[in-house]
Image 1 (cartoon, one colour):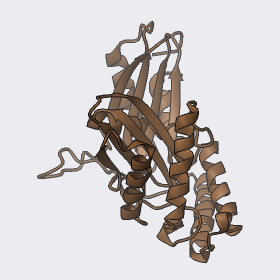
Image 2 (spheres, one colour):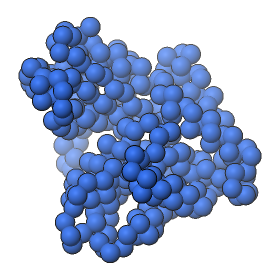
Image 3 (spheres, one colour):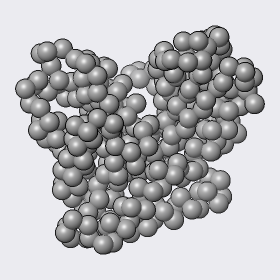
Length: 289
């Protein structure tokens, strides 16, 4: 199967089904809400939202229909092995063509405009995707794609924190951003945090964090502990599923961090709704182009 076909098939699947880790967290949220986890008063309305989400997912899978009307913008992260012989232009062409074919063959809402300020004319095919490129070891090409809905994207934010603020500043900032978001990003949400780099790199890292298995914490125990502290704080806000109050506001927190300047601590918070639609396509050296 060609790379174009792999991308097309993955995106047709992503519009109607969720990865196992995402489903696991949704079922965890439903159970925790029902059992009044953490002593918080359960919200019957929030529980009803979770039940509706799970029913919606079952219908989407059975009928092969999108789980959400906002099928998002194609956010693409490409890891190219340094030993790969595949031309970058060929990879880019496969991404564009695979995305185009998925939109034509599945029920994708046309949601992309040519320019952001003036005419805002619809491109009619959800192209172009937003593509980030990275060099990695090996010879494989790994392509991760997120269907990024904008109800949640519009509540994402960047903060340039005081470098002496430490973990407390991170926790406080995330809490403020989630509180401001309220029910707009369709909670329960997934939270990706990018810390370090520059303003733009932090935003990139926060998106990259959303691809991690939601059941797996950071490999560094310090950052894993910070993820848990941020998640606990977000739950204490009691925004709740659908913004209806209750026990569960977020399904996971994932952090990506990198070196930064001594004078700063950039923090980006990328919020994704419960419909955490992500795919990963791996292309080997001996696969068809």
